[in-house]
Image (cartoon, rainbow, N blue to C red):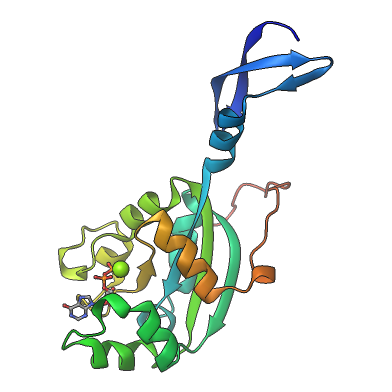
Amino acid sequence: MEDGLSVYVRQGKGFVNREARMDGENLLFPRATAATMRREMDTTLVLLKPDCVSGRKVGEVIKRFEAADFQIRGLKMFVAGAELLREHYAHIADKPFFPELETFMSSTPVIAVALAGDNAVERVRTIIGPTDSKKAAPGTVRGDFGVDVMVNIVHASDSNENAAIELERFFAPGELFDYAMRYETKPATVAS
Ligand code: IDP
Ligand code: MG
């Protein structure tokens, strides 16, 4: 075994310095570093709600996440039934507005999107803005397209723990994909 090395490895768009060592011809990273590197891409769950679908903002909202470097790992459309909604909204199921929320959420199909990226949970929550669309700043998804505190375009997981639970709630194992981004598109020739 040789002495420890300090090497530069890619992380996101830049490089970071890592401790490593040579073992014969192999460059080995300590276990903790390998775990840290794997963790850099978190996955979070977004639901495009009935107002997003009805208002034809599906493309616009997904475009914002792609522009922020998120990778789509899964995407599906379905009608959210009563049982699913009661589970998903268990933390507010006893609120007086819950029946109305249930009616709203099942009024059209919704679209679940699994998004991977650096610090995904927090960055997606920042992009969508606060729950109440009226308090959400222009430039956020809810600020630009939401109507009020209920009709607010999207759901997004609020912690890594809940993201894991919610991804499992809406996607079967075979519906989430791991893949490298191998191709780049031509620069856009029409206004985006
Ligand atoms: P979040 O979606 O920003 O995480 P939560 O507090 O988890 O907000 O509430 C879940 C959803 O329940 C909200 O996105 C919204 O659609 C609805 N909701 C939350 N608070 C109210 C309310 O006071 N009145 C009506 N609907 C609400
Ligand atoms: Mg929430």
